[in-house]
Image 1 (cartoon, rainbow, N blue to C red):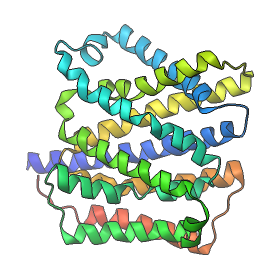
Image 2 (image 1 turned 180 degrees about the vertical axis):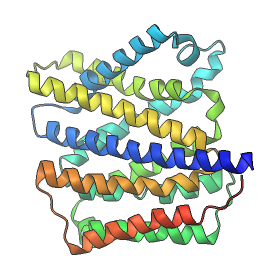
Image 3 (image 1 turned 45 degrees about the horizontal axis):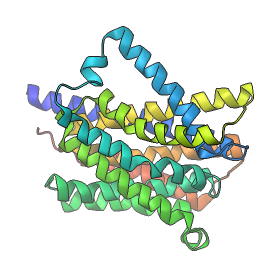
Image 4 (image 1 turned 90 degrees about the horizontal axis):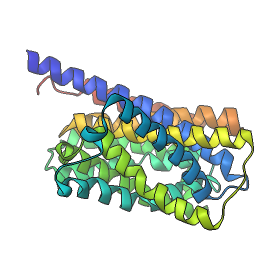
Length: 298
């Protein structure tokens, strides 16, 4: 009985974390889209924004005594996986930065929401996770909702969409790797080394092209960097506790579409039509079916 209760608690905790993560992600995307229309270039944004967030993060770990536990490892081999994950992550925020300047927020997020589909595939291949036909049907229901929101014609009109698919595939692979090798580092350790390479890479370029920013821009940059760090910590933790049950929490990444629709309307005047709203309802149905069909076993 305790095992079932623990399994349920972990499932609901993972769903809650993913939902908060998608909220943070949509706010980060909104902030990035706003700054993309200014004189900023991606390396300005990530040097100042993520740099600020990582400094605060290190100060927190210093005062709480967490540096040794989360950042410094006795065995040098333990640095390999977190750092490789961070180095391969470098192109992802650059793609996101440019894509958001070319694509409406709700369409961008819709394409990004194909990630659970690829996560299922990677989980099946890398973790040998048994995924029943029922779960594939539920996921395809959610996937069909994303098509309704984005509209097939938009896929032909904007080549940036295919770059976003690259981001989806990359995220799926790293999500599953974090689940599979969750014992290799803590959540905070994985998160720190995930963002460190892109920050250093951006800082090197920033030195050759510095920029002066206004107080408003500075606030937005710091908020954006902090939101990105929050996203990384939350989704890393969610997949670490999920273990071999990534199929349970994956469909709830679709909630980012709801946040994107809200923020797209508030900040950019993007309005969803009836077809897109129908798609969002289908996506919500997909997540609900996932909960209802979760077996009461460990």
